Image (cartoon, rainbow, N blue to C red; front, side, top):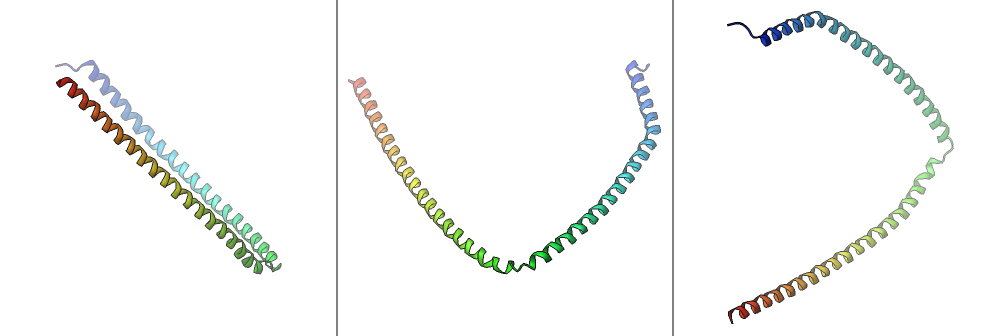
Length: 141
C-alpha cells in the first residue's frame, strides 16, 4: 500500500518543523536570557534610584517636621479636634435619628399600603366568586 499524498505532506512538514526547532531553539533561549539579564539590571538600577529618592524625601520630611514642631501648634490641635469631633458627632446623631424616623414612617406607609391592597384583592376575589356562583346558578336554571 502506497502512502497517501496527504501523509507525505504532513511528514515533510514534520521534518521541516523539527529542523526549524532544532536551529531556532538555541537562538530563542539566548535572546530570552539576554532579555532577562537586561530586565534584571534595569530593575536593580530602579531599586537603587528609588532608594536614593526615598532617602532624599525622608530627609526633607524630617527637616519639615523639625520646623513645624518648633511652632508648638500641635499641642493645641487635640483640643480643637475634640471640639470639632463633638460637633460632628452631634450632627451625625441627629441625622441618624431623623433617618431612622423617616425609615420607620416609610415602613409603616408600606405596611398600610400592603394591607389596603390585600383588602382590595380579597374584595375582588369575593366579588369574582359571587359572579361565578351566579353564572353557575343561571346555567343550572
